[in-house]
Image 1 (tube, rainbow, N blue to C red):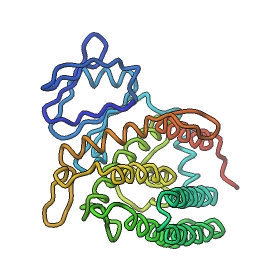
Image 2 (image 1 turned 90 degrees about the vertical axis):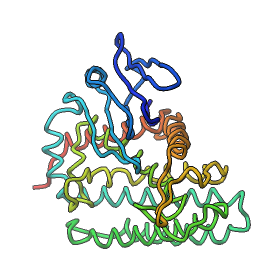
Image 3 (image 1 turned 180 degrees about the vertical axis):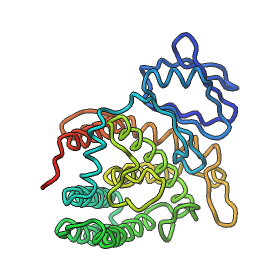
Length: 328
């Protein structure tokens, strides 16, 4: 599980081989074996003995801000695997096989988002045609990506980004029309968000970025060596490539919060039309996201939590890199 320390003033330290969380409501103990990562927000503390305990048990520590995206982390030097993986990763990133890998990830994302739109039709018959049209338009771009032949990523990155961006516009255009009225939005907005839906989604994306980066590190893959996003500086760009098939999870989480009308205006800090989650909003979003990501589901004929499925996929990717041999 992922331990999220969000309440202002909460501290975590080590006691008798366990983590002890202390806040205004009292104390709570957690065994290291139960944790995969610890996430700390502004205004919280972790002691050096708790850091040492986390490192000993290969528990990732992430420090996040108001976007939910990690801005610092501590991990064990024992994370990962042999350096051969990272050496081969350099060759793979420049290969035609990497282009196919990117294409596959983008297609998986678009098809998963299209499937989500189709799943919404049953309870919204009045929106059936709109949802189906959006899904069909998205699928057309997925086909373009899948059938496109490319020799270098540099020459084709613009095409992939353009098609993926067009599919996203159809997708979020449809989502903006089916959420309850108080959550309706015109377009996808990032940081800062311009509405409640996008604000909550940005935060869950941030949590998902952290989970994906942790999985890559655990698997022995360098998250800073990207493929489609290789031009970004000083960022864990492979995370942006690897996260694509899982983005629909974040969108499903926020959609359910909206459909159940659990997000209220007072859960947001709003200034100059910029939306940020307040403490109560973070608690709602973090709790819902953790429940969803820790839910055990069947994927690839295996029952795992969604977070464990990400780690399994990262290990499969690492195994491919370990055995990768560039074409001569």
